Length: 148
Image (cartoon, rainbow, N blue to C red; front, side):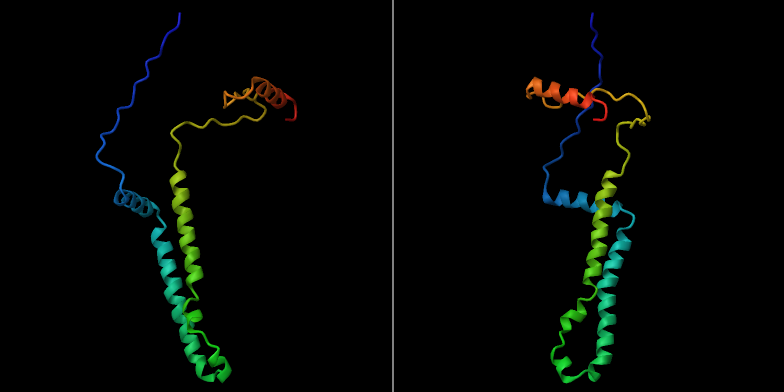
């Protein structure tokens, strides 16, 4: 005699509209705001972009009158103003890493079981059922060998 366990079904949520760019943008903005270091990363990017450029421009403005005519002719002001952009890109890249890893750092819905050293390993089951059974049997035999 077999019995069937009754598993309660999860009710479906009401559908309140389509997926739009505005809704996706709003959800991404919420995710970005939920990361604790967003303000610090954005402040660091602004500080690097504006602060280092202002500092570099002040240093160059101080030394420009003492430069040789050849150095003055070879001077590129854009290089000086973009001094902090690479560090700002680093700060924004770190923010992106924090946002992405923060999304996956939550505790999973399933319980993780601790691995006991020396415990018997469960025999693996094939994932794909359309494989030739002989190949599956050979691979399972290979995995069962000591040292595999």
